[in-house]
Image 1 (cartoon, one colour):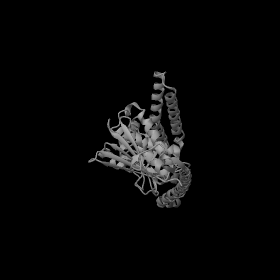
Image 2 (image 1 turned 45 degrees about the vertical axis):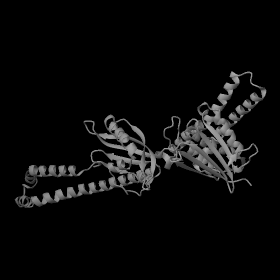
Image 3 (image 1 turned 180 degrees about the vertical axis):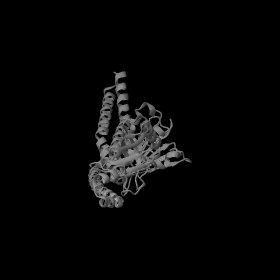
Image 4 (image 1 turned 30 degrees about the vertical axis):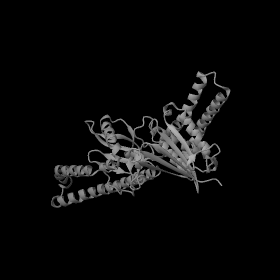
Length: 429
């Protein structure tokens, strides 16, 4: 009996008992009526014969059932072993949710993905929902509820809290695999894939794109203004025209430096940047950036002053530091753009250089950093009140300065209505 079950054993017992009741007397009379003594003996021990016969049959059936059960258990154990081997061979975490009871099987990979040991958390639906990032919880639960109705396969991305308290991004894919006669979902299975690195790469790519766009604004605006002047005034003196063309060329070079430095920004962000410093003349660099700022229409009413050791910087003033020219330009361009944007019309952006044990650049501008963001001034994406603000200017400037062995700080004073940025860089030689 390849599909022997306890119910069938009971059925066999019932059939044997019924046949014995109906036929035993007739069989005894038919077989032993020729001998009164033998017939009497059979009738006397008929009950015992029944017990012996039924016991023998039931024993054979039960042994068959036991053997069959052992074979089934061995098959199940082998299947579970194969399943566990398959699950351990993939990095995806597997979940199996019994909807009505709320019980969820989580695979070993599911636990290790979050930094937990196997079965270290309860196998329950509430375990999963309790680990979802608060900002993602409503969206994910709405997706699940819609799927319980539609039964269509789904996939969604959200964050889960790890044992260490951090967050990972997962891609969750699932499908209802069992439902009752009324179409109500009873069981759902799916997988979690760790996509944290992919999300970080996407975020970093977007950040670099925004940084490049931010850093191109000043040289691009300068180039546009110079081109407009050259076009509108064809009678410019040769010397003036030559100077404007030089500035136009410099603006183009600045934009090219920005594009070429985009890979450096990526390497800095990912900790792969290897600095190769060289001698950089900071006075001329700052003078050029200030000139670029003043050629932008939005800053025509903002004044600037460049000081060296407390006095107006002369044409031959020099402060040579160690750094990477392209990165230094981008860093100071970001900081000065931020200062010019914060300075009210008619006020002055003051840039002071000091050369002692280090090269020190101090940028002062009227206006204060809003109280809400002072503690996070250099953090990524922190901005307030700027129409074009991305929150990447000061963040990327600090990253670039630090990558070159320098430091940067900010101090803002409500009493003086002033914000001061201080940058230090190692001196050359």
